[in-house]
Length: 171
Image (tube, rainbow, N blue to C red; front, side, top):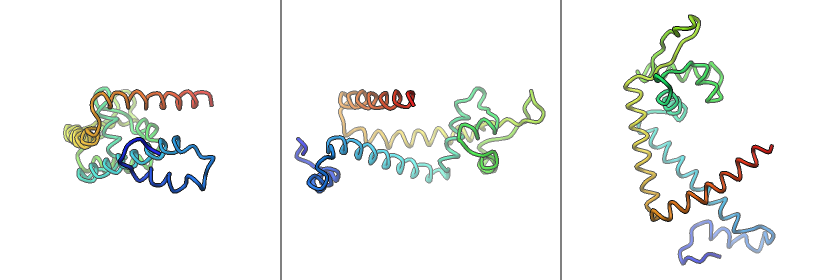
């Protein structure tokens, strides 16, 4: 099955199903299951990081969008659209962030009916701390590979991502 002496749980599972599903390409199945398993574990690590900083994933993403925006501002409608949320759901999220002192609402200077959401210094600092904490956790995982292997893996994953992007563009 694999050229390495050490087997992971996916190798063992593929061995179990080999005879039951003879038409299944186990090589492809191994790739897909490993990518999915790594994705779930990274997401779980991020959830732990956010829990440690008392943030939900949605709040963290809103802080990230604001921190990358010109002047640290966006409208609530823009944030809702990017997050694919209703305006009511985004309002609840922004209320929690404002209560925590991470964002503030300010009148839009071009439209009296609109409000701009601005990240505060505390919000920006918290966002950057969570990014740093998560990056440190991810670096520990990546250390399983040499720098050359990391480059090779990035190149291979890029090829897969480009294949998905081409397929999606054709749909």
